[in-house]
Image 1 (cartoon, rainbow, N blue to C red):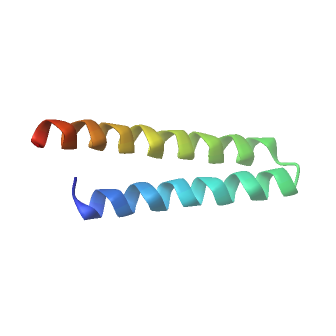
Image 2: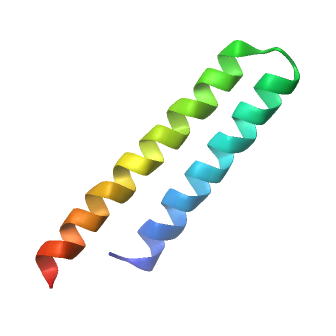
Image 3: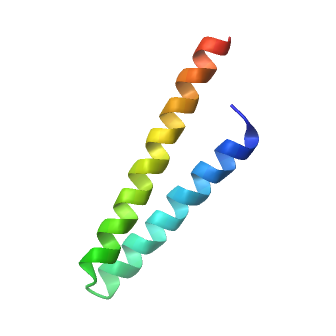
Length: 57
């Protein structure tokens, strides 16, 4: 896995957590949902990278 991909995935996950927290704090369910979606997308990308790494070894 490239370090750049890992950084991008972590940044997306962190941004998703922030959106979710802000959405929860402001009772903005759309923003909270968007944050959860961002986190899920980042986790899926990370899982894909882990699978690629497993086959590269």
